[in-house]
Amino acid sequence: MAEMNRQIILTARPVGFPKDSDFEMVETPIPEPGDGEIVIQTHYLSVDPYMRGRMNEGRSYAKGVDIGEVMVGGAVGAVVASKHPGFSEGDFANASIGWQAYGAIEGKAARKVDPDLAPISTSLGILGMPGATAYFGLLEVGQPKEGETVVVAGAAGAVGSLVGQIAKIKGCRAVGIAGTDEKVAYVTDGLGFDSGFNYKTTEDYGAALQELCPDGIDVYFDNVGGKISDAIFPLMNLNGRIPVCGQISQYNLTEPEMGPRFTWFFISKRLRMQGFLVFDFADQYDAAIQEMAGWLKEDKLRYREDVVEGLENAPAAFTGMLRGDNIGKRVVKVI
Ligand code: NAP
Ligand code: FER
Image 1 (cartoon, helix red, strand yellow):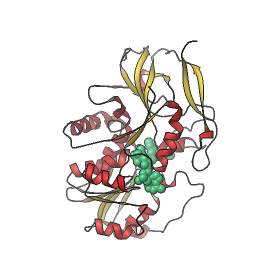
Image 2: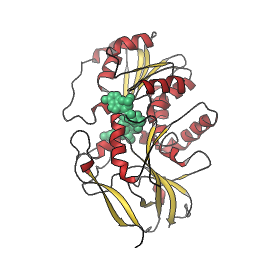
Image 3: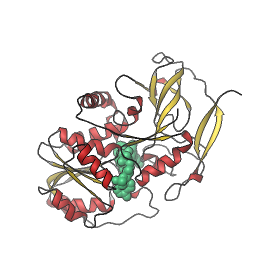
Image 4: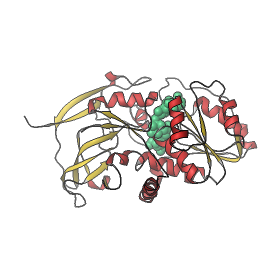
């Protein structure tokens, strides 16, 4: 029998944390490219926090995944068939083909990946969407100045690990918050953050932050929201900036969580809190990725990948990432 495609489809809308039974693996024929399309054989696929939102019903910046549809997401692999003049068989391409072994997509929606620049999996991490998120979120939205203090939670993850390192490149003090001692050691000893703490074993976040940020906080790169953000707002300096990148502490809640009402600090300290979507900067990705690739070559930036083997393990890889199992960018190796 001919080789088949394998796809992970969404079978139920998760309530709270997603479960294995919300997904199923199915076999379908390998697609053929239509005019202007390419077919990519997936080598690595990405699992990212935003996918939790795409499993819900209702409107967002993008349409949700319908029940019975292939889970969405970025992937990178080899072009195995092309009806687009920009791609030949054997090229590597990154595109949003979702959780499947082969995907057909318009060539204009794919990005060619240079395997000599860095391993192709980095196009899903440091040299891809999470890398651009850290770069633009910190530099454009956060506007860090030399000598300032930058705090980031989710510090050992795909975005946070880069935020602290870019802050260091710009001459800032970088403080990371993460969920295990190993992660805190990784960002301080391994990545050059100035300090950090484990929010799962620290009782008083405010006291820990006051000790680690003796000059207050100028930029809070908000990846997580919830109690960590609550502890940070009162410690922000005059004219502080808060790029709101993600709220992962809230993604699996079934009821909205109430927090203290801290808006007064935004008046007295003239704070600016601004949400952003990485896609807002899509026309500038190439320049950012080139600059990050340069920093990588000069060892000013380091990265770690957390590789889970097997397409069938994509749902568990995803939920494990939401729970904090990963250090660095979590990807699924398909072949
Ligand atoms: P990641 O940090 O590699 O992985 C997620 C991490 O979140 C986990 O490892 C876990 O680490 C942490 N976490 C989970 N629950 C938490 C909680 N209750 N409190 C604090 N930390 C928690 O993921 P990523 O891809 O880099 O994404 C990080 C954030 O950026 C997410 O909020 C995501 O939605 C956001 N994001 C936004 C954009 C945008 O365009 N705005 C783009 C990309 C990503 P611990 O062990 O430290 O808990
Ligand atoms: C993310 C979290 C949220 C993300 C995008 C969003 C690309 C956008 C959500 C919305 O518009 O509803 O990690 O990554």
